[in-house]
Length: 174
Image 1 (tube, rainbow, N blue to C red):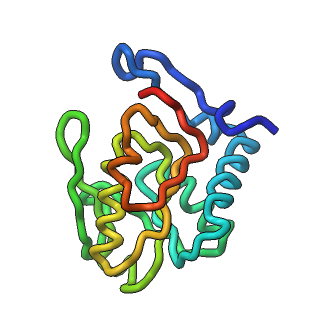
Image 2: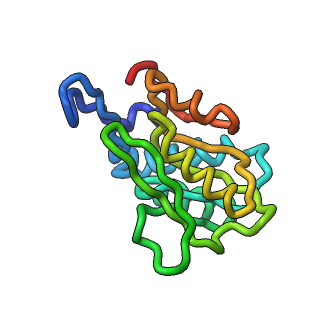
């Protein structure tokens, strides 16, 4: 079986010149790639105590739900503002050109629950940090934040320094 990074398709100059876009759909369109990704994420959690898996919209839903299923844990979606039907809590985070808001149902995490957060890509850390903030607002504890890919040059790990962070594949650049 190939290594996880061999399933990632790198697209130069997307969405703008100078950017090396790391496309995870190469992982998804291969049964072996998807299995390798889920096994890598589950492996990161081998010695982690947790009650619930939180997945970031949208690719974190795919990988997070698969991890929750494999480890027999409940799954909680963290969604863009306005997408959840019940009462929510929200957190705003910075984007390269503006801000975004992420939400979770107010009853998604119970006080004292330990959560792992699954996100496909660590860039600046803003979305994962906002999701961690939501877990904590609801009285939960973040046990670990797991990423498939990390762009180390954007220093998102430093933004998330108070958490245990792990990535399956680390790219040195941006």
